[in-house]
Image (cartoon, rainbow, N blue to C red; front, top):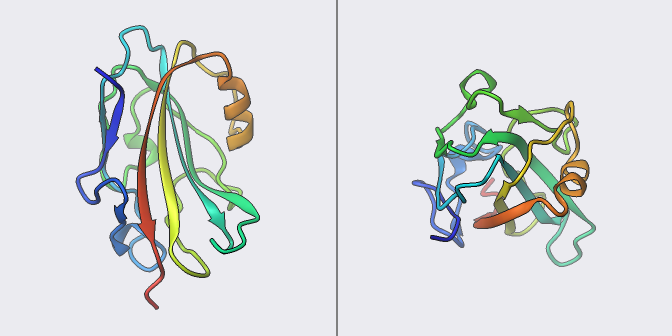
Length: 157
């Protein structure tokens, strides 16, 4: 079975409800997955927006959430998960606000794409609050499988 990631609140390619954005409660959406390889030592979740600041002229990838060393047997993350609710052993990296934790969509212009990418690794990562780039570099050669869930969002106000 292939690695898959999903959410109960939006479909792949669908709109992210405003509750999970800067216009709502800015809490993380519930996420679940299946098909983790038996030999996975850990999982990494990265949520990012490649359309920043404007999809017509993107200049950067805006990082919304970085989680690493999720246990290979973890199956989901509840809505609005806090650091205390993360699976034992899970660590948080830095987002583009310069802090750990989830930061919801808040695009300045147009509709943006938000990729929720889950990686199954054959190792644990040894960091203290890394950036997305540091995690990506450390994962090289260790990815057993990956899955992606795409959410869309455009500010209403």
